[in-house]
Amino acid sequence: MEKQKYLEDLQDIKSIMDRSSRFISLSGMSGVAAGVVALIGAYLAYQTVYTGQDYLSYRRAEMTQVNLILLIGIACGVLALSLIGGLYFTQKKAKKANLKLWDNQAKRLVINLMIPLATGGLVCLIVLSKGFIGFVAPFTLIFYGLGLVNASKYTLSEIRSLGIMQIALGLIGCQYIGFGLILWALGFGVLHIVYGIVMYKKYEA
Image 1 (cartoon, rainbow, N blue to C red):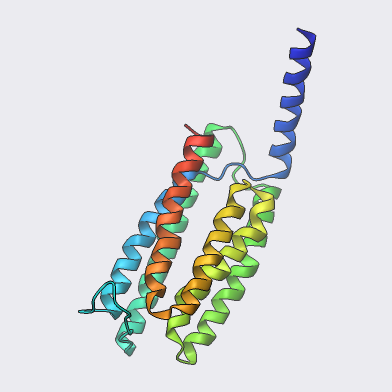
Image 2: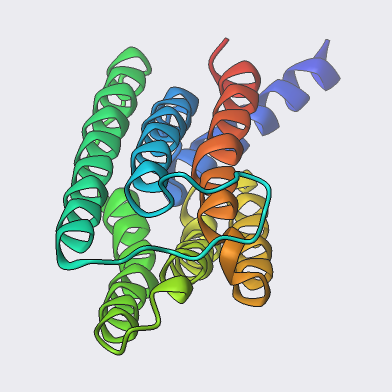
């Protein structure tokens, strides 16, 4: 009995330490929502720049000023809806677990995530202004993955693996430019959905 109580006490101490050092309110459903939104955004972007081209062949983007404006609008919409969905489900999980949504751990998570993301955003704007449109999709994957790896020490450890996979997809996209949008959909869409389902079953179900 004493040994069992000792083990339970150790488990409680470990749980308290995890709560104090990591942001654990991140919901798996946030990943699912972001993935679904990303797939819709990828489809709209594909229809905008690859109209009439075969899905499996090497494609060349048809980039006009109108298409560029539409792509920026799609990107902003995807980002906004993903953030809204992420905040909703994460707040819901935090409330259920009686935890604060915005605390020191959340601040560290956001800061460490945003440094690579902001850098990547500026790099993508520079690349776009130089006319290297095909590198935008893989670069977003790479810098997003770097952001996840950088922020993983402040939240669930599985985030690191997700980040590494995003980086790998981005590097592949740099080599095969014509398939960048498909790889983007795979990274931001499919991987987010799979990750979200796994995390939901592991931590919330």
